Image (cartoon, rainbow, N blue to C red; front, side, top):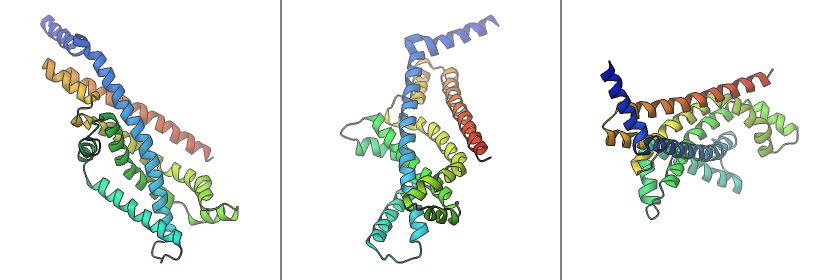
Length: 243
């Protein structure tokens, strides 16, 4: 038994103490959180813009002929949005990340920026479809109510439609952000020293697989559980505000 605890203690020391490996894991966690945070913000921005374009087209021009110049502009941006969503959802995130790093940022090789853009653009395509479905789920009478109050289309969307749609899509939106946290674990493909990369690096240097990999898994689990907790709290608060 004492031999077992001795080996366990040695394994822990090699994993977390020697060569500052515990600090390396913390720095890797910081990189993961940085990529996740900025990719989430970019994904939300892109998603809401694309969803607004697509839902506006669906409500006003779908199955109709363009009559004004603004109709042609909307149709053009809707086509661009459709291509964006089709391409992003139809290709693996790892390939998108490597294209961003080796081709678009090929002369700079800035892994953090490449990862933020790749994950943010990828997330934006999924957020766009989630938000669009939420907007289209709102009854047409809500648009008419906004117009009767003197709001234009943009004001109706901002003050009436989007707040209601947000309540409907919050669970799906939260799930997308949880998926994004876990997707960032492939950032090591372009040598970004994120949490997973550092854990695997420690494993390769210590020949100890258990503690590095289990630690990384538990950290991701903790992040997801914290995020889920706050999302449920927000969902409950929004639900209570309806009463």
